[in-house]
Image (cartoon, rainbow, N blue to C red; front, top):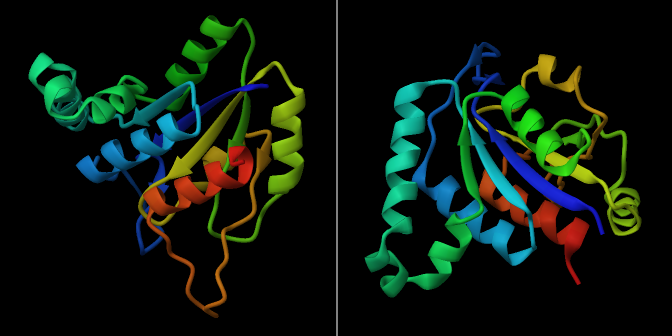
Length: 185
């Protein structure tokens, strides 16, 4: 089975006007995606933001959950937070995974737009058969900027429900669905 990593990118992403921005880290994204990552056996969950103040904010939340009193209060949250790493940019994430695993991970982007190049079932089978590393990129705001897609190996299709004309899941919900499709029993 392959090692699977997640990276939640806060830059470069689009705002609703189509401009490239840096979005803010939220406590919900830290907590909920870490819990999904722990549930599905993700090796590490990277939170990527170039702004020092945003990384400091995430670091304060992370540090709180690593304290002894937090372990007594909610050990499951502490276990999930052990998977979190806060980084400034995507190249730093890829370099860390490459150094740890001895090879560059296969980088897979996600999008709410129909641009998929690999199906969930194909990637699921690939993960089962591989001993390599995979990095799933998740976007915030109104999605990953085009420049991100230029550097990926594949793109998963959007998650679509039966509602016509509406496809704007929270990244937390989308992550849980993606992990279930790729790794669920």
